[in-house]
Length: 401
Image 1: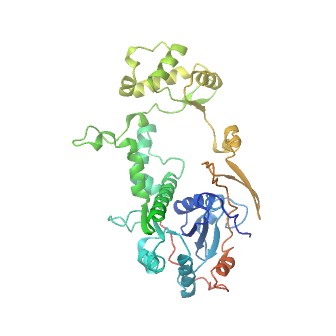
Image 2: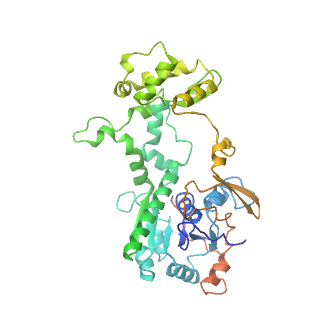
């Protein structure tokens, strides 16, 4: 397999030693690769578990794995073998970022805790991706997206909204934590750029998602004494849902006073009155407002409502499926999707969603076969022949997140 295209994005020249698996860490480093970094994915002999969790064009190349590991180089190291530990130490010596998603005890047992890595390369940025932070009593618990959604209150607010305790239909905890690991690592790199100092960074899924959930839901509970429960009423109003129209559904938010006034003048619903005139009034009876809007939206087709709302500059959108995103005219016009030729055929990736005027990112290539770049990376390090031995029973790289 050829090496990924050398990056020209804002992270070009950065080398990332990536010992993450599943989604949280790999999503973070996938973005680094798209923005130009050389990401070397260090895998155990059996490979990242996500290689086999969904459909794919070949064994070990599931769609989830391929998407969050695109543009990386894969090397196989059995970190219970001394020779392979030596390879990792050399990668550390030449790296800018060391990022892992093992539990603290596991990475320390292998000899790659922060103190060990910093002794080799004091300027390295060392990012821990954990389920729970090390300073708390739950630090040794295994964590996955579902359990962290439960911990942070997502199913509880879904129950308020729908009447049933449900997970949201995306692995939100993994992805939000992955984005957090990305920005935390970038901030540490910025500090190093100014001072030359490396440092250790810790990102945990639970703390990240608790903070994320409480952005709006902290609400009255933030104050001393509390002014109300930790909930944002509009978000959990039972009638807050896509509105049924004559022929389908539409999402619309008639929110601020200007939008409300414009809507009322155009539609003239019989229930409109002074009791709903201001945002404060509507917020105090938000579920009633949603219910009344829901009755009104049944009177016209989805397209009729869309045309009206476009004319009135009121936010509205049809309901789309994930499949429809691949044919969405706007996404295709802005060039979100990039097709990459791989040894398993063309792959159409959802590409870099950010835009840079001078250092644009790009999908650097397809995802690597397990260990596809072991020899070439060893050659770059000046280590010659491969060090990897026969797989041992377990590698210590099991990932809790």
